[in-house]
Length: 90
View 1 (cartoon, rainbow, N blue to C red):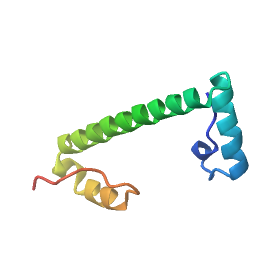
View 2: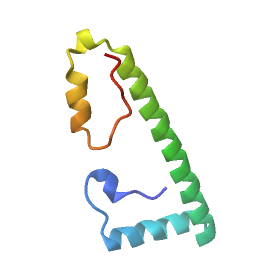
View 3: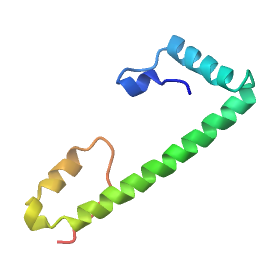
């Protein structure tokens, strides 16, 4: 499976993108259409996995009592880069 330089915390350069695309195609025995299909299936799987993890985080946040967390969750949620689905039940 191709490695993703962006997963290492740096942006993908054009040369990295081309090298990764060539790796994906080579992994599919040179069939570009098969490589695209594999990548689309992978992206779909990762999106579903991310949605499941976000739902799990939302459920965990609901399970933590506000008294125990003393309102710390709200400030963490406000600072999150991506919005986390959470509503306070106060």
